[in-house]
Length: 436
Image (cartoon, rainbow, N blue to C red; front, side):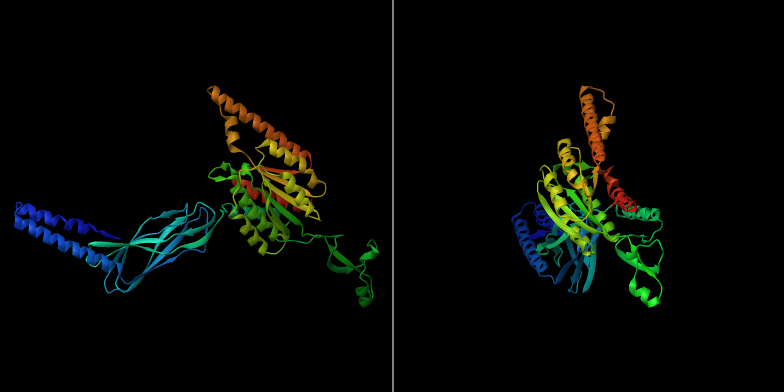
């Protein structure tokens, strides 16, 4: 496509000036038509030359983006012509991303390679892609723009926002300091993991004697055993309709997704086996507990593109399957919401499947909207009704959480912006108290 430039728009006024100057005489009209023809020929020629300009455009973008995090995208313009070239670049950023500026106006010096950047802030996580580049090149005469499309599609991933990563790290450090130091330490006792040798004591069990060391040193030697600190943790993420509601600028599911990723990083750093289950009306994803660092990548891969579905949560299936697949005592951390009281009561019923043998921690997000409505002073009947409904729901919610605690379930109710660090603090506190 060839588009006239501003200079061309001004030049098209010349034939009109000629006609007006000649007072409409036939000679003036003929001259105007001649000028118009010459301008049209020059316009077409300039546009064709602009399409054939020896320029090369290359995009340089990050391999992956993060929601809410500013990244820079660069276009490299290589001009092989012996004259400067003016360009207008209009990139197609990923869906939902904010680009600043939207359009780049570029002037490439002769025989040069220049780089021009713009900022991008993605707002949607999951698989995404850059589109093609629409650009305009100005012809040598400066009267025609040649508009072209450069195939530049590029697929990439947009990872979830980890806004509380620093806060989670500080929470982990505080918990370690409460454990008597910022380093991991050993607990000696009647565990099953061999730790060291020591002199035999009359209070030692005869089974602790190391007979080979005793024979070699010609005196009784006992074994020291280390209490097993490598435990099993499974994070269960609810992806049902209750998690689609917003808390601030993101959904409850996004807040819980962040908490799941940061919990995974902390648990693996503690040397625990970490597993993951994502469920709604059925189990969408299950990762068997593993201790390898690659498990963190597997959790991120399984969560970054997942979205909650408008279905009821099937707590019976999720909790019974989790219990069935865990042969050893396990800490189950359920990231869910209890605003829908009927569904939450079903979760309370089937939580007994886990609490018989395992440790069960339920992490919920406090509903800030209900809290604000409950504290609002009503001025009319409609507001009074809204306050009454909010107070009733808050009371049911409080009763349900208390019933969970009485049934042996650990409960953490937190605001959305604090759920990740507080969940990590609770997890480390349970380990410190040897509840597993």
